Length: 230
Image (tube, rainbow, N blue to C red; front, side, top):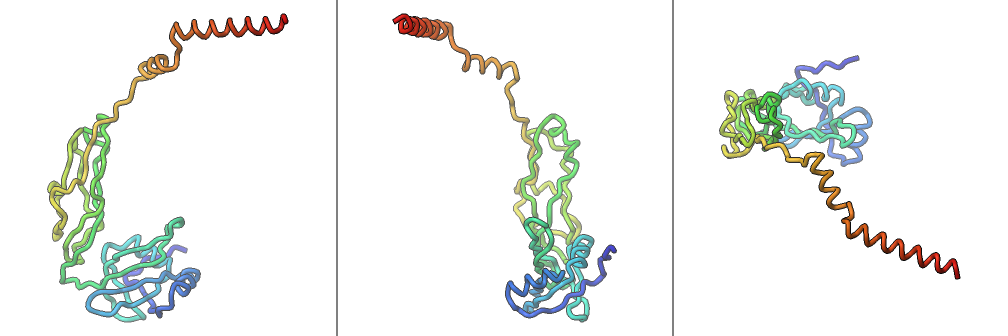
C-alpha cells in the first residue's frame, strides 16, 4: 500500500548509543537523524523510513516536524546521507529555522532549454559550470531549484550568474562572474579517408623496404637450399 506524505513528519527522540544502535534502527525500518540550530541543543531522532522517503520526495525545502508528539516546528533539510548502492536515506540532518528570519543555504541550478540552444543544434557541447548556488532567503521563499534558460546560447558563448534571474525573495551570494553554462565547439575528428591515408603512410612499407625484404627472403631461401643439398 502506498504511503502518503503527512503534513507534519513525526519523529521519535533517541539516545546517543553509537553506530551499532543506528544500524539496528535501519534494520527495523527507521532512519536516524539529528535536529540542531535555533539556539537549542542538538536532538537525535528516528523517523519511519517509508514515511521519510515520501516526505522528502514531495516536500519543498522546508519541512514541518513533530518530535515525540509535540507541536510542529519548521526545519530545513540540510543533508541527507544515502546508501552508496541502494540510494536510500541512512541519516538526515535537519536545521531548526524561524519563518521570519532569513537564512543561508544552497539550491540546485537547473539548466533548461538546452535542446533548442543554437550552439547545441550546431553540434556544440553545453557544459554546466556551478551546480549549486549559495543563497539568502526567508525559509518560505527558498525554491526547490533555480531554473536558467540556456536556449539562446550560441557556440563559444558563456553565461555567468549575473544573467540568472533570482527568484522573488532570494539573494544570490556567489560572485556574479561565476560561470553557470558554456557552449564549446564540437571536437574536430579526422575524416575516414584521412585516417586511412595516415594508416597507409605509417603502416605500409616503402618500395625500398619491399625490395630489401625480398632480397633477404631470396638469400634465406638460397641458404636453406644449400643446406639441404649438402
